[in-house]
Amino acid sequence: MPGPTEIEVRALLFDMDGTLLDSTPAVEATWRYYGSKYDLDLHQVLRTSHGVRTVDNLRKWCGITDPTELRDATEEFEGMIVQEAKELQAAGKDGLVSLPGVVDMLNKLNTSPIPLWAIITSATNVYASAALPTAKIPAPPKLITGDDVTHGKPHPEPYLVGAKALDADVKDCVVFEDAPSGVKSGVASGAKVIATCTSHTRDQLQGLGATWIVTDLTKVTVELLDGRVKMTIDETP
Image 1 (cartoon, rainbow, N blue to C red):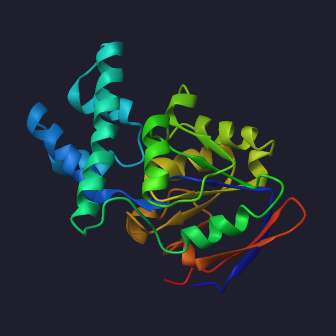
Image 2 (image 1 turned 120 degrees about the horizontal axis):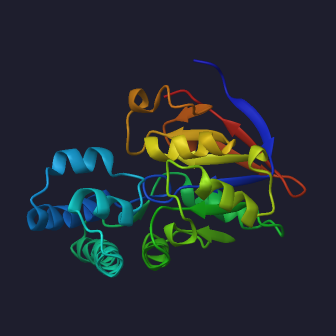
Image 3 (image 1 turned 45 degrees about the vertical axis):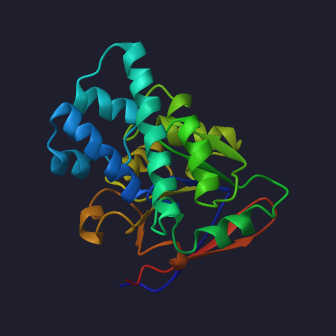
């Protein structure tokens, strides 16, 4: 395994669920409800749905195609995740929580007078706007949600839109992702990609094109330069 790598880039583009926050217990509880309602193979759904827009998952797995029904079901699904998370937290369990190293890194990035980072999530704006404060994640300079793109991950559009929102060349950006669909999206956009082993194993993330694979964001440190970010990346497990 190589030693730490240092790079300098214009901006950092972060996925949300699984990369910045852990929503697994609330998401799985919501999918159990939908699994019962639509007679789904939950193992198959949970194995492949992570990192994909809710609207795309509901179309694929639940067979919902009517635009109005699909919109309402998406709002219901993501609202249920937040509600489940709050109930879990009220019971003293994990609902929506920030992942290791996340809050310190983002707070440091937010001290820059120039926006240096954005969140690029497959979730809707309604869900993201509720999930971030619930998990106590600092507000990003730019938030790109599934509502802001025509094509969701693994298509490159989400990260191309994110880079543009920061007035950055996507090739001068680093994408942080935890799911295969998101890694593929970042790679296809032309950005460098750091894959985090926070929802998938290192073996599951190998061979997808990520430049680096790290355990979590405690393996990445940032230093603010003049409108840029210097990063040190440690790939050791």
